[in-house]
Image 1: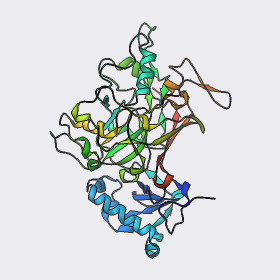
Image 2: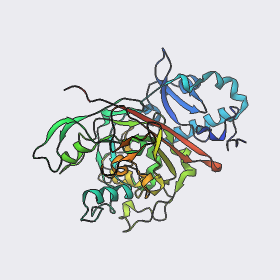
Image 3: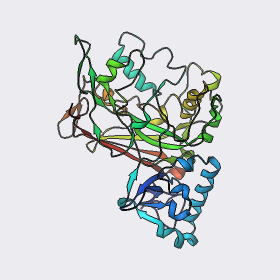
Image 4: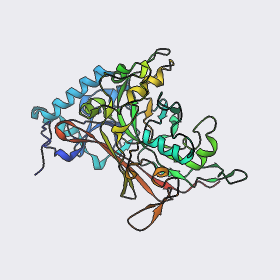
Length: 406
């Protein structure tokens, strides 16, 4: 017997919908012959907000204009949508603006202003440290004191389904006498959660921990594709560059923070205690119970748990702005690779194959260390919802295509 949703609706949504009334994620969609506009996923449908509300802010082809209106507008519209979808008296006005999700094309939900990627999973950082620095401590001395991150390339953030063209660049193995140029031979994924900024901040004014929900609208799934051979040759001394900047894929639906109240959990214990601007001791927690699933060619290869992340998104935002750097509407920052303690909880193939030394065996008998042309990687995720339900973050998928001809 299927359990009813915690919040009943005249749509009669089953509990396992993932896109129930307690979710209501936002995206940008189009149908044949129509312009992209804002929609909200509910069940197997998309509610056309431009048509249903008559508000031009939802007809721009991007969420940015709506996100810039700030928390009061976000809350007001969420309350209005909940009323429309739960009160049968609104059915006649709302139902004509519901479009089957199977009939829509999804677009990049936001115009990305800046993109920052963090490195906040202790298990991921320790795994890489053990691989690359076997005779040293796995964590660098700064790792437990601050959320490490880098600025990425906003212009190559693309929506789920965008082909992943294998990047080319310089590569040099430790035993090679000199670098060579060619397609990446160690193409990888990074399973991450992204955070979308709505309300900007003033240049020179840090954003404190408690202001996180005043600036961040919601979350999405992120696959930060990584060319490990390009990355390992270029990253000293300035960090990731061409090994990361060729493509970052995001899911089309942005789940509001308001939908994640039931998913909030305490983060792991920190030692040493963070400096005051990062110290969330006694504060409302911003760890999140989000379960990610990684599929390679439709086979589950990993289930990374987000609730074990050492640094929370509130701490990441506080650190990102503590020097006075300002936020802009449409900024996207990602958690960094999500990994857990188990071998089946690693959020990248460099960990799953332990640097290529332990190939991942698939059900068809084939093996992988890193990604091959034709491989399809899909990330999905759910978060704890009200009443024991799970809400969906949707999916982000990409197919590996051969490198472009030189």
